[in-house]
Length: 358
Image 1: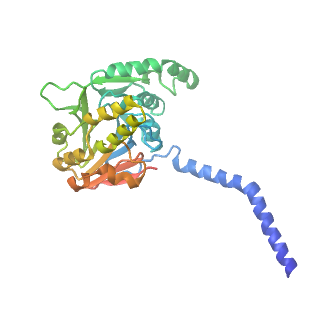
Image 2: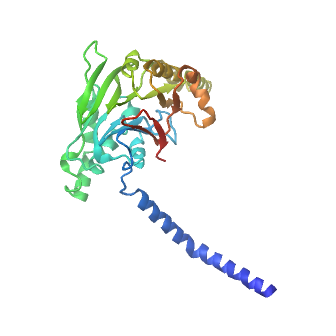
């Protein structure tokens, strides 16, 4: 009996050893093939209902954050796709979310602060290569957008030549590289202007207050009875609030002044006077969570998502501290954005479904 048991244990040990030696590679191969089948070349939007779909491709700010890309929001409206700002690292997040690059019709800039445009070169490159564009991507934005787009065209000129030579003009079309700047100029005394109106999609630029940066815009996207309002960077803005009336979803930037003041005090204590001064300066041209909540309440939106979080809470435990009194001001659905957040607004309903692509 003992001999049989010893043999059985030996067989099991041998099997486990053989599995450890050879089976690990087999499992890795199966896992890799499964991932290919589920993700590569798959239309991740195939199951989406017709309507508006909001992608958070960047919920962060200029502050370093391993989990948050720079400010970036993208919208799928029916078969048309749009990108609003493109902070550092955001376009890779957007592609990881399965955003349909070939459907991108245009990019929109809220303003020309570096943290909102330092991923624009990558967006133009991916729209060209991954999106198969045969004409430059329209880029809507304030005065100076032409300089940004032109500068990126020059910066990527050598890479453009490399890619055409390597892949051939049938794969990367020489006429599709770069961007085509579309300057938004709101007449004096006017706070809103429709800048895109095609295929049932209407996009309205909204003047906001990010002084001394001027002009700065928020945007409203309307499609089949659903609407999303995006603040860009601003203090509490009556014009943005008014233009957001009746929207289903508001995305609003937010800065917690108490937390930033504490950061500034610690920097000053440690002899970093210049950085401490920056922490003081930035408090004057951003909205607090309570300001954003006030805007959402007055606009009568049902769902408010805060993004461009300054400073972004590193753990869930700190989120109530960041929000402050915002939940007391706004009684609807209130969330902090995370990279990868997906928000679905199906046409013909009032539903707002918040999910994640990651």
